[in-house]
Length: 59
Image (cartoon, rainbow, N blue to C red; front, side):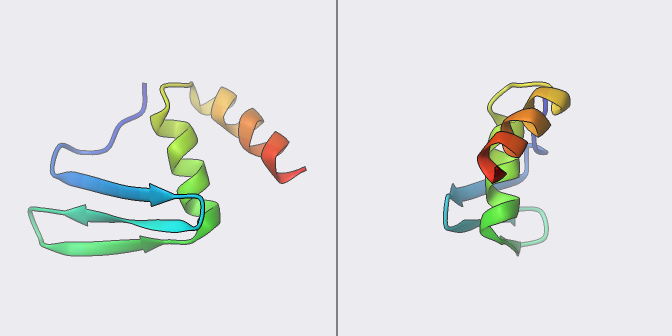
């Protein structure tokens, strides 16, 4: 299973999102494409399954 570091807190939507790292206080802003990919990875699928699901969404 894929997961973020304990200090990283995602705020993800289909319209984009951001990840805040509480250790540094920095925000990383995500495009809608990056947010969708991260949501699939965090859903507990393997990287291969997430890639297949993402390809289906993009088609």
